[in-house]
Amino acid sequence: MPTKKPRINVVLEPRLYKILVRVAHGEGISVSLAARDLIKDAVELYEDRYWAKVAEEREKTFSDKKALTHKEVWDQ
Image 1 (cartoon, rainbow, N blue to C red):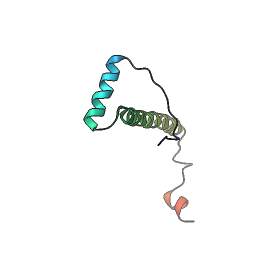
Image 2 (tube, helix red, strand yellow):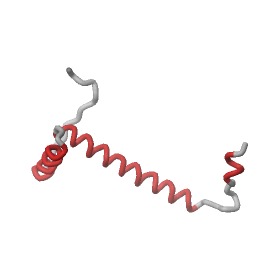
Image 3 (spheres, one colour):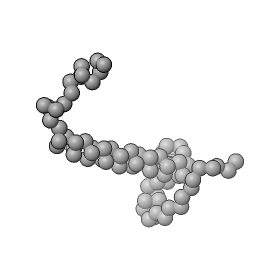
Image 4 (cartoon, rainbow, N blue to C red):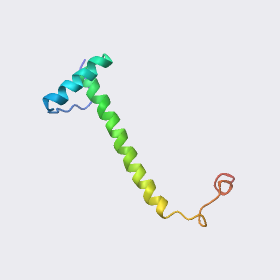
């Protein structure tokens, strides 16, 4: 049954392809699924780095004097 999910073609160096095949066989899944899972992990790491950077920038402007207390935020 054909899938409606988007597909991509990727060209890998032989060494990277061998590693991907080893990962897939070790997990008992197809090479395609192994690639998908590794890409998902990489995207999560990318997002984590992005949000950490956003948090660092916001932290620079944080002021205890201007901050709301827990009670002020949640007891409305």
